[in-house]
Length: 142
Image 1 (tube, helix red, strand yellow):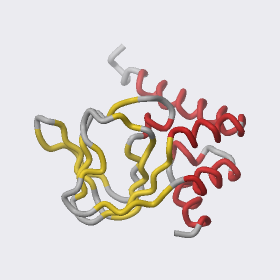
Image 2 (image 1 turned 60 degrees about the vertical axis):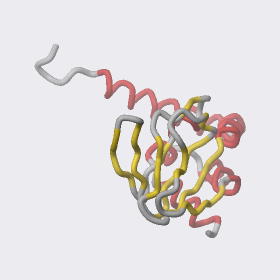
Image 3 (image 1 turned 120 degrees about the vertical axis):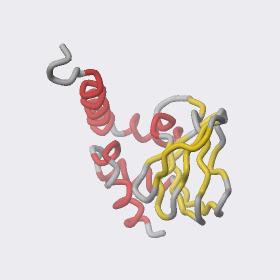
Image 4 (image 1 turned 45 degrees about the vertical axis):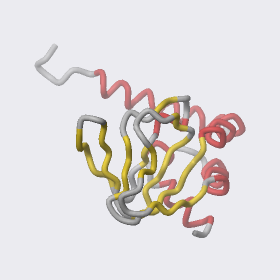
C-alpha cells in the first residue's frame, strides 16, 4: 500500500486523527501490512500485545474462552491500549475471511509521541475527553 494511503487510513481513526500530519507519516512509514487468512488468529487471548492493528479489509470475530464476542471490520483499531502501554489481549481475534490489517508497533507510537509533543498533548486531551464521557452519569442517575 502507498504511504499516502496509509496516512489517510490512520487519520480516519478517532484516536489518531488528532495527531499532526508528520506524526501520522512516521506511524505509516513504520507500520506493516499483514494478510490474515480465514479462520486464522491475529492474536490469542492472554498473549502479550505490542501494538495496535487497523483492520483494512475483511472482518474479525473477538472471543474469549467462554464463547463468541463482537465482530469488527474495516476502520476498526484492535488493541488500541497496546499502542501506549504493555498489555495482554483480553480476547482472541480470528479472521472470519481473508483479511488485511495494518500494524502500528507500540515502540513506534511512543517514539513518535516523544518526537511530536503537540501530538502527544492532543492525544492526551482526546483520551481525557473519552474518560470524562465514560465517567459522567446519565441524566437522572445522580
